[in-house]
Image (cartoon, rainbow, N blue to C red; front, side):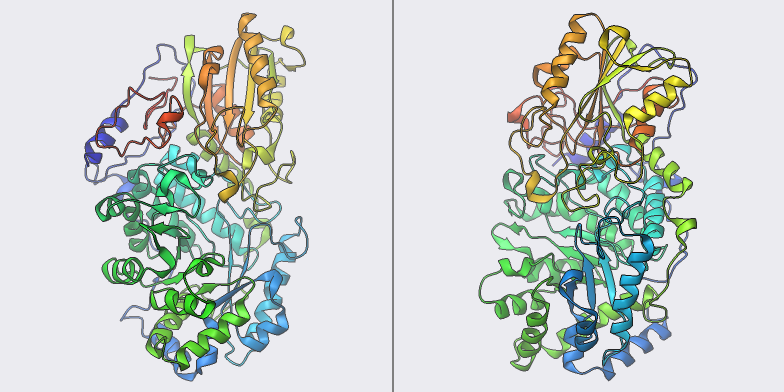
Length: 633
């Protein structure tokens, strides 16, 4: 494939506007290709301020402690370390009885209520940790959580833009700082493991997890992966690169589906980010539900053992996805044997954890899994626990006042929103808006922080409440800016020169978002979008300036509606600080710098057409990969 040439051409491609605003601040655009810009700060390794990701030969303390633990453990204690249970399905007494290796909170799984405080979270964590230390092995648990855009399961946390927006920003330094801030907001709860980042190189936007991927093109993943993981792990939280391998390349974008591609293409597209994950020393990697040419990844000895562990040299531990080994052939004991022998080190069995321990133990006694393989898995798990300080100080936490939804984190999230926005259309330079003109703001997304944040916010499928405990809506931010300058958000179109229409998808995650009808009015789109679009048409016909803002987890077909908008902005899923970040750019305090990390299709036939095609034609689509307007050029 001729991807390198295409990427360079598209990234150098710019679209020029004749009008500009002199006082707008242009956000810096990072260099993407370090072969061309080797001296760029974005291409240099950040300073290491934490421990090594593995027990290096020179780290004798690590080697000695881990090996001593292994030598003192019996088989039952070892296999228990290889199993993870969901918080809601295991009691502290059972943790003490079994000495289980890990516990997780699934999406929307809170200690007792959605609005539990940081202290509630820590007390839950502490209770489980107390029990683990009283078990026969006395080894602390490692606790995992889906903190995929900030510590999003915890009420009151800073919610950063989802990865699709961060891919449009394509700023490695920004990702390092977001990783750091997310780690800090996780550590206030005592937890030290996040199931992030997703390295899904998404080839079909019909997939419900599209927004979890940075881009359709591996070049952006290669630019962002290293710094994302370094930011998390240098501040005390284990990263989890997921979902290995090819989850973004399934046929027709089907969740947990089948990747039908040759090995060269799979390596070029989907394996590429994992080189960066291994280089960054990612503590853990999660296996994908999906298959490659019919073979389930959870049983793939070739892709896990031969490629990931041997060829790439990954030395952290491998975890299965939620109940994923149940999709392998055979009985449950066959599924355990197949996945562990293929290289899976820890089994995420939220409900069947007790049977998993027993069946894993029996499989070793029956010589279906070797004791050396068990020792290898346990060694990897204990090494991560050593390096995150869990073995020595399992109760470590950060102070809430200094590290949770701080002004610094809010400012960082606001910066991330500004950099993620992509200006698709700006006829007659109608943007930036004047702060002294009255604006009529409409649409279902105009006053809803839950819609701004999307899936994996408070709950697995997202939080549809307008108030999620933090953040500011677009309406509130616009009202503040205009009122400070003698203008208003008005209550009728006749009172305004400009009409701003905020369209939105409803929150979703995983298979619930799989959708072959990607329009503004069908599929996962909000039912009230049609009313807002009718207002846009009416305003356009009345001679008003009409600005569109789309909150979505992927590009949507704009069909014939685009003609009624003078300006149109892809805002993605900007998170809790979305209102402020959008206001900053729309009113010209900052310039647009975001560039499309996904091709924006012209019609349904182009869904699945990406910049990775050998003969990619940027002129054939509505907006090509790398496109984005601004004020100053």
